[in-house]
Length: 289
Image 1 (cartoon, rainbow, N blue to C red):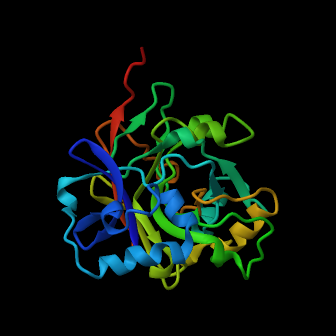
Image 2: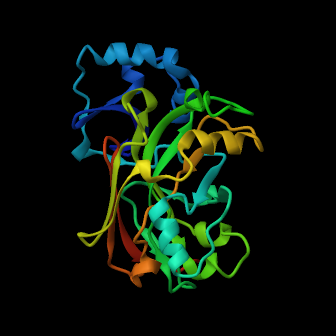
């Protein structure tokens, strides 16, 4: 199932995407939760009635007539792993950046989350705004101390994300959080594809374009630490909650490696096989009151 949060005729709600339409969840099951985070927490059984109602073939609203929003705008955590693709680690090593010996985690503050087609803003205080195509994972079950073997059982679904990064802010601090957390630098979407729809999340093609130029391309099988190892590691430290977001790393050819940083007027598109795509224009940061 593809779970979307969208706005239509001035009202924001959640729905299930079927082909090129979205069907409001409330019309399928009036007793169903009203947020995607709660729908994921309800588990497979909680979504079964919705899936059954979808089989009746309600037409819903054409996607072309709605605005897709960030599917989970109120995540409690947005965690991301650094240098987790073999080819990205190799390009970093060539640039003199040491490759970590263990999983390297940082926070993207949840205030950075924005919609799949919303603008991403170039900060007035950064000249090195970069892109990072990544597959996102959303937790579907409250958990702690999860084994690698059981990790998939706590996954709610997957999404497309761009770990937008202000490199100058990233590298001036011992932690990456500031450089990773500027407002609007966390576009996610276009929806949450539930785990049951993806046979192998480590066998998907991931691509990123800037102004139509292909910059990044890799299989999600290129991860150094797979998703199950990532969840195992994080759950040793903290309780993971339904709706928590995990960005699983980017592949080679980020902007800093190519000497091509994002500029106002650029358009960045990230697509992942089976998960859809997001596409964000780069705009100048608006003046604050």
